[in-house]
Image 1 (tube, rainbow, N blue to C red):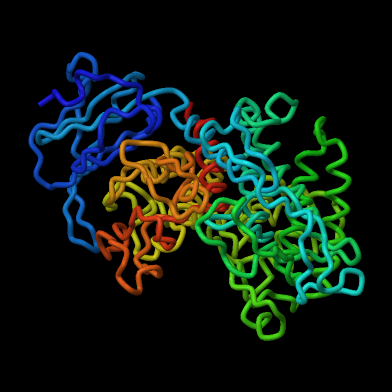
Image 2: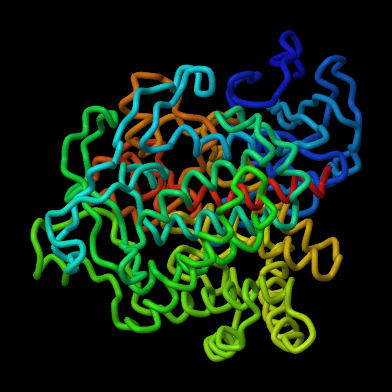
Length: 577
């Protein structure tokens, strides 16, 4: 039985150094487990003989395995065995064996460091407006694309000071997702999620080296990367009135070509209230957290001023929501790229007022935050940013605002307790993924990672171990213990996405995709498959994933998804070590 891996023992760190293909019978975390974490394997059968965990070098059994339960999928009816081997805490390389099947795994300190570092590094690889250099990017190096020094004012964005057809310079920033455009709403959310994690784990992130041009300065590489995007965001504010353009975009998506082969004119389009509140919130947040920066000494003053100015514009333009179809009826050229539209700016206003209050202490912002505070807790996404502010109140509320902090904490814990309660009957020993609504566009980030961050805040506020366990269970799901057997991060694990919906990875002529990218994940909506051209293996909620470049509904990548992943895994890696 124990023969397949015995002759070639390799460090299981990333998919660049793997043992073999994943065994489809055994589902477990493929990137590495911490010594003290709960260790679960899920076997794709309800009939198991002897289960063993063996040392990879000697073949000797090293621990007893406890069968917890047989779980039945609420959708497919598949029966699976959930097995616990948490008693094994010694770092090393092992093999999980059952019914003639074998799956290697590793136990190590800082088990999520490499995947976290790679996920952060992916932002460098997606930088716009600069040469991506070989000494930092290796084979993913590429020449400058989209300098964005002559971006046209779209008719929807025209003003007396910046008329239609005039130009502004708006360089830097990150390509947003599978496309080459840059969006304020998503950028603000992405940077904020990573800043939240940085605030709680500064020393950890300060110690990560992602090998980027700024790595030798006095600032954490994560912050250098975030600053590269925020410097672009600052160019998106109209200096004449404080409003913020919704996005910088071509009229239509480019083809699957490299940036140097893109030739459409790029525009900034309509100022929106959601983009402007998001901008105000992020700039206030960053100004506060980075006030002592030695490498960016002017940033706090600049960002503070920009935040106040943006907030003033948004307060004066509450109806300036972004509805692209309406804009296209009025202005040409039509714009048919990502919308990031929203029907309400109340959550953005709450976030902006919260951050400006924490930055300035001014009562007007406190009053606005109290007036727009939600009465429940839901996990965040780019279109619902209230939880970012709720977490801020939980951490920073005191004195006169202690009641606000207590209320938000109460809402968070009620939400987390409801989620955790589903773990005991779940198919994969997770608090998420037990309801069909947990699966859909970007679910791995917007359900699993976002819940993971929520559990980490609950753990910080209470010290209760079960919340930390829940966060780790969310990570385990993404990294291999799931219904498809994929480790859903490019470049990692034994079974990893090879064909993400991303122009850079598709057009660069390199077989392996850029590493460190979290894909969207199972999406039973299959919005990309109207003509049946994508070979989805199943329509079941947790199995509806296709590793196909054309599958934008399940296999796209995005800066917001990676940001939520970084926020969760970096935090876990710091406290689980």
